[in-house]
Image: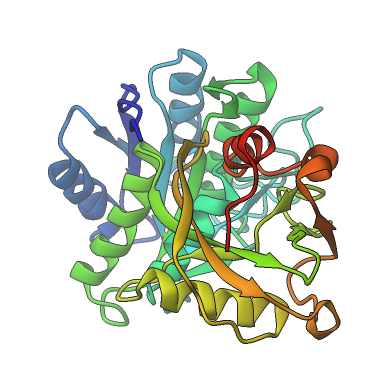
Length: 337
């Protein structure tokens, strides 16, 4: 199995803000500098943003010039207890207090003619992966109405207006709100943000298992992703990511239990595929988990399942990582038990 070479990309931009509201310091800038130091200047560049209208436009201009492969904005929020990944920016000022230039705006549009809300362009898969790996990261849908939200909205709107892309996916832009350092130590904040920055810079790689399950007729089980999933309507082997410390067999047993509500005894690995999506790479291992009773299945994470023999394997739309395996089985036959 040949692993594709890495894709060379431009650096990501990491921004922090100046102090505001009489604060003597703003540790978003300290963390931005720490991220660049950890990743290296070839992968990340940091910029200090003024807390005013001009500062809110700096990153969006850089995006329009195509200088970066992603943008990570950092700001502080004194009411947060953990590092908050902001999933949406609102097209609305609600400052209620002056910025560092003395500007006061309230309940006005940031960009006239733009959408009311724009969600982050960083892949949901990447965000979910980061949150799963760090107890200090949480999701937030409230970026506020101050310069943080204004900056975030302008950056996302630039991506949307110009259809800026990295490969086939939109250029990733994300905002993270940081808690006070007396509630979460600076070193833990740096670690959490660094994990996200590295995921933006280079798609994460994950080891994934899929279960080959048969019925008494020798047909194999395929399950369909539900409507709320990013890959809604696509079909796959039951399975998922191998957690830290798990063996392949432990992981496939757990995943089948979580997704189908049944217990299996894994056998041997029967197929593998290394596949690069736009937002991550997947090292997929298919494990033979034997024959099951179709009546024992309870769909927990999918909305439909189908039993397929060799002749009709291609009647459903398989996930891209699964497709090469399915094509090989159509050509050469299903694995023997």
